[in-house]
Image 1 (cartoon, rainbow, N blue to C red):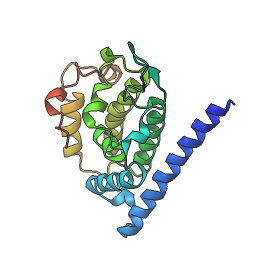
Image 2 (cartoon, rainbow, N blue to C red):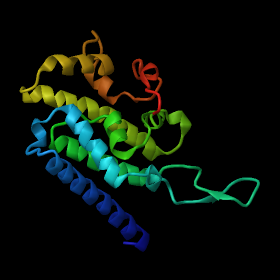
Image 3 (cartoon, helix red, strand yellow):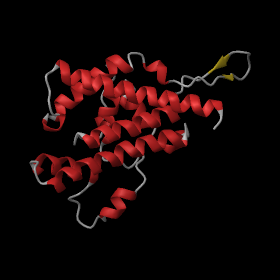
Image 4 (cartoon, rainbow, N blue to C red):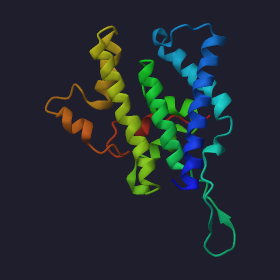
Length: 204
């Protein structure tokens, strides 16, 4: 394995460990014995708590690769994120959501990392061609939300009304004649997300 690859792997492991440590601190500070039994709002609070300790400045998630800007000698990273790093953090976010039976969402990932929700949503528009990895991150969060919500229905210990309302609105579960396979596999760009462009929250 090349030295650069070892550094990247170490960096990912450091972030994973820091997230786990901060989550443990949150539970200790709030005397929480079992996060699985806590509400989604409490989980969102945990993600915000983690952000304060692990990602106090989202610039640490920006790319360090610099290129010369056309027409001058100034080098810049174009303010782009390190998508491979963010993708790895996204995988760990999905993992902890699954472990604690919580909803996977763009909002939740934004609470964790500090990356603007609107920015993450633009990654779903492949016309921007920012990166294939940025599109992959968006798809993981979008499709992961449906999977995490539908999993709650399967367990049978949740009130299905609110869950079904969300699935109906964002994933067309109640639309007659719509194939579930098509809905899940369809390409989730900003163009075909129902009412998404009208729901984008303004930045703080």
